[in-house]
Structure formats: structure tokens, C-alpha cells
Length: 289
Image (cartoon, rainbow, N blue to C red; front, side):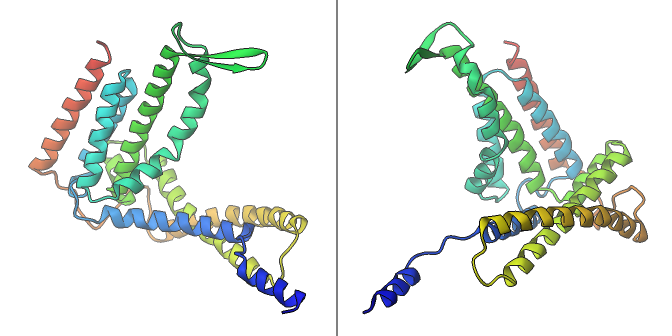
């Protein structure tokens, strides 16, 4: 076997790493699939899917407020266990649900609150020598940071659970039932539809780029194409926002949300609201102890 043939075979045997375009296409497609899959979760015959959206919005808001007021780590952990139980009873993928939550906002919340473990408290838990100085980790700071991260995680988990088990149109209609200003509902409705269109437009641009590229491009060429694509996408987005709103007006949109289903509050819905209010009150009262 000649050297050139061996080199070619070696190159064929190596796994080619995906480039920037492939990674971007995969990320955009994954976001679109997650949004569509969320709508499919809302149609499953689970525990929360069968409840009235108005009751769910009121119950989850009360629980989020109570979690925000809590300063007890065991109580917050118990509340998170309740959230996971509700996710399982609603026939959601509990592992995927937890991953979606904890890889997002709580992770960044932990980064923000991390310096507090070195400055809050008086009892030393750990000393980290770093050359000329030593970092001292305090027990009170670690407890406060852990409580803050879990509190954010519980609040975000409740919000994500509500979105996964309720269709977006039903959430908007429930907000109008609570006399939320119509301009707020209109902005949310347009934003939701616009995000889908923007993702589809960006995905089409990257696919067009990939289909017209034969050889591997240099880093300078990729950066130049990204700058040009950003400007093109910006101009398209400005024009698209007006087109979306005009299309909604042409189809009779007047600020009110209409769905095929009429909301009907049943006895099980009232029971769920009472239980949620009792749990929220217990969490809030415990925070004062």
C-alpha cells in the first residue's frame, strides 16, 4: 500500500468533526423539536393535562411565590420532590425534565451566587490555599448559596411544568380570564409565533449555506458569512414581525385568545387548587419560623 493510499484510508477512517454550520443547524433543529414536543406533552392524558388551565395558572403562581419566600433548604427539597412527582404523574420524561431545568437558569444562578460562600458567615468549612492567599469557605455561605440555587430551581421547574402540561393558547386564554392586560397577552402571542418563524428562517439560511458548500471553508470565511447572515436575518426579522402581525389581524385577531375547547372547572380542579394553596401557605408560614 502506497503512502498516499494509506493517508487516504486514514482520513476515511477518522471521524470528521462537525463544523460550525452543522452544529448551528443541529441546535436550531433541536430547539424547534423541543417546542413541538412540548405541545405533544400538553396533549397527553396525564394528571395536570386534565386540569383546567385557569386553575393551573393560579395554583402554580401561588406555589412559585411560596417557593420564592422560603428560606429552608429541606422544605425546598421537599417541594422539588413534589414537582418531580407531578411530572411523573403527568407522564413526562422526568430525567429530561430535570435536565432541561438544571442546565439552564439554576446553573447560572449558582455561578452568580458562588462568591458568597467565601464572604458570608463566620464558621470555616474549608480552606483553599492559592499561593499568596487562602480562600476560606464558610458554612453559612454554602448553606445560603445552596438554598438560593434550589429556590431558583424549584421556581423554574414549576414554570416549566406548567408550560409542558398546558398548551400555549390555553395559557394565554387563562391569563385573559385573570384580567391580564390585552397588550401583554398580544405581545406574548406574537413573540411565540415569531420565534418559530425566526428559527425556521435561520435554519433555512444555514441549510442553504451547507448545501452550496463543497470544500471546507476557512475560519475567516465562516466569520465573514456569519456577519453577513446576521445583518440579513435582522432585516428579515424586522419585515417578518410586521408580516406576522398583519397576518394575525387578517385572520380576525383582536387581542382575545380563542381555543377549540371551552374551559370548565370540575370538582377535581377545585381540589387541586385547594391543595396547592394549602401547600403554598405551609411553605410561606414555615419561612417565618
